[in-house]
Each structure stands twice: as C-alpha cells, then as structure tokens.
Amino acid sequence: MPGSSSSSSGLVPLLTDGSVTLRELREDDAETIVAYCNDPAMERWTTVPWPYRREHALEYVAAGRRAWAEGSRFDFGLEHEGRLVGAVDLRRPILPALAEVGFALAPEARGRGLMSRALRLVLPWGAQQGIQVVQWRANVGNWASRRAAWSVGFTVEGPLPGLLEHRGTIVDGWLGSMRLDANLTLAPAHPWFEPVTITGRAVKLRAARESDVPRFVQGHADPANKFWLPGIPASYGEADARRHLAQDAESAASGQAVSWVFTDPELDVMLGEVVVFLRSARDGQGEVGYWTHPEGRGRGLATEAAFLATRHALLPVEEGGLGWANVGLRASVDNVASQRVAEKAGFRGAGIDRGIRRPPDGGPRGDLVKYDMVPADLAGLDLPTAG
Image (cartoon, rainbow, N blue to C red; front, side, top):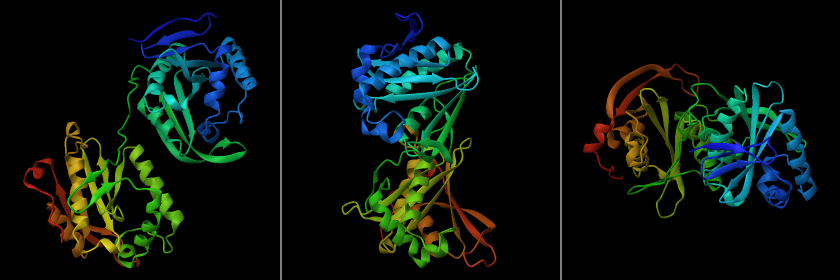
C-alpha cells in the first residue's frame, strides 16, 4: 500500500508503494546521477548538460533543495530494490495550481513499469499540495516517456509544431495534461493499440519497419493504388512513407487505429498493409482497410490479411483481441476486386453508402458498398483459401 513519512531534512516526504520509493536526493547520489545522465538517451531526449559531470549532479541536488524550500519545484529520487534508479519532479513555473512533471530512469530500470508506479505516488501527493492541473511535455519520438504518461491517464495532444527547444533547436513536441480532481483514476484514458504479430497460412501480419519504406514508396507509386486510395501525393517518396509510419504509430498510441504490414511468412518481404480503425469506442465499432503491393496481387493475400486483422479486432480481450463488437468494410461499387476480398474473407453485405467516394480525377462522387462482421460470425469462419 502507498505510504509516506518525512525525510532526514524534514522537507521531502518519503513516498512508497512497497516496490518504488520516492525520497530526498542527496550529495552521495551524485555518482549514480552522473552515470544515468550520461546515457545517450538523456542527450537525445532531455536538456541536461552534456557531457554530464559530477559538479552538475551536485548543483542539481543543491538547486532541488533550494526549490523545495521555496515551494517552486519538488524533486524526488526514485529508488528500487534499495538503489537509486532515477528521478521525478513536479515544477510550478507559473501558478501554484499548475505544475509540469518531469522524469528520468537509468537504462537498467526501463521497461519495468517503475515510472508508472512513481507517477502514481507523486501525482496524488501533488494534489495534496494544491496542484490542480499537471502537464507533461516531450519531444516527438520519445515513446518511452509518452507511454509512462499514457499509463497514468494523461491526455496527449500533438505533434505540436515547435513546442519545445532542444539544445539550440526548435522541435515538435507532445503535450499532455491531467486534472488532479476527485475523478482521478491514474489509469489510461484510452487504449494503446499494439500491432502484435499474427501468422496465417499465406501471410504474416507484423509492425512496419524502417526497412519497409522502399516498399511503401513502390506500392504508392502503383497506378491502381493511386486510383483507389484517396490522398496519395502524385510524387510519393521516402519522406511521405516515413510520415505514414509516424502517423501509424501516433494512431496506435492515441487508440484510434492499429496497422500492420502483411508479408510472406518465410521471406518477410512487405506485400501490403492492413489497418483497423476504431470508429466508435462507445459502440466498439471499427472499420478495416487495406492495400496491396503489385507483387502481392492475385494470390488471396489481402483477403487473408483483412480476415486476420478483423478477427483480432473482434476476439475478446481475454483471448488476446481488442474486444470490438463490429468491424465494417467499404469498397467502391466499381472496385470489384476489393468487393471480392470482403466476400471471400467472410464479411456480410450491409447496404450502400451513397455519394461518399471522391474519385482522384475530380469527377462525380461515387457510392460505396458496405460490409461488416461481428464476433458471432467468427464461429463459422476459417482462414480464407489463397488464390
């Protein structure tokens, strides 16, 4: 159970949940602070002095002690199994009721949920000090920091252009916020979707990689994909592909969609992409979309990929799925190949959406054929036959 007591200085409380302890930072912590602040991730994502030396650590401890006395910043050392492994702080730069949280972990302590535990200790304590709103900021790409903020319920906006200054450069950032009120749960406000690897008969679904960028470029240069997929730039290049991958990661982290590339299970060469989008969290309703690299057509791969992704979305959470209630699929009335994918994958017809599709040539809008699948449908379905 979380608990607290006073530190030796009388200023810094001792907060603990039995696994993680937040305590006063001391001069004899300097060597440990120097070690983890010289980790390359600290140079990349934070603004600590670089290279970080002992005098920096001693000044950090001393400045923290002064800030505690002033009530402007509250620094805690993060201890686990009797060793200092990081730090967390609350800063009040403008108003006493508004704070910003910052944190860092030594490399050997990462990926173990320790920062989530620390935040669940320090945020309620901050509320007792009159803090009403806490903000979190990070450079875009600092996924470890974002996951820790997400795990305790921060709502994140971004990427926000030019939000932060980083070592003399203006960079894009993420901004999270949280109210420390009676509704505080310290639990995620929404899911973070993970593209878990799923292997079928003829395809494997996996997360996209940097090495897939050339395949994205080739696929989006294909005339058929340009015709049927909305919004592909005329001269799609590597920068566009990397933006696409960044948006896929953002959509997963914000609980909006989960994307996979599908590949040959043995060669692992990207042959297309499949995405399930969450359309209504309240209703558990989603939609699946896909496209195929020219080398993957005519082999039933999109059919199997669409089925595997949809099944994952519909399976109960306790069986490793997302637990959705319905997944839809829409195809142009003129796109016979996509309609065949839906039908062979086991989707059922659900009507027509009229005047939805805008052709790339700017012609009149067209209709979309609707399909859907629900969990009960899975009982009578098996992996589609390729070909």
